[in-house]
Length: 212
Image (cartoon, rainbow, N blue to C red):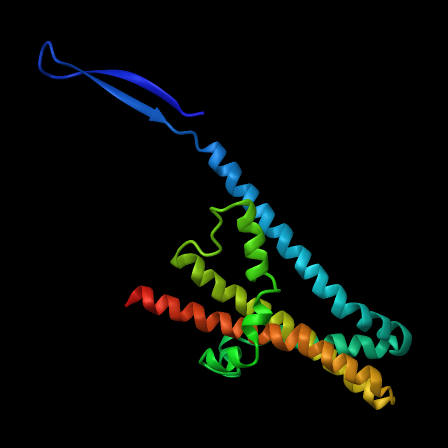
């Protein structure tokens, strides 16, 4: 609850007294609210991450357990981890386009609805906390650019791993598995990679508008 107090202030002039009415607004409830909003955002984002991860990795885990020798699995993991060392500048150079139009043509806006920090997640958060803002200021926009590179690297790493497994499936004659894993790779990795590129284009556009 807000606390208001009446203070007496003596002026330099004699027989002249001023009264000041001051309200002290506690910051703890606001801090608790912000913490609750962050927890809600983390919860919804982790739930949707868990859903997509189970959908993509369950068949991969099954295939590796049934058909992939352990030594080859370690080799594939090692090859995939090399992606971690890709610089952000290289990711920018090899991205699909510097314009958002190609991304919209392949359905990125639809995919964006059902991903981490996507439209559906933000809608759920706002339904509980109407004051929630995914982007609050220019600094938060810049942080999102760094976050997008990190997420893109993750999906490139998994993409390379999926490609290795898929090639192995084709080599040993398991064509059905190869086709299925190719499709899973496109949904779980290729589209999320394009989504991060699309997000950076939009963020950079917003930053240019703010500075102009």
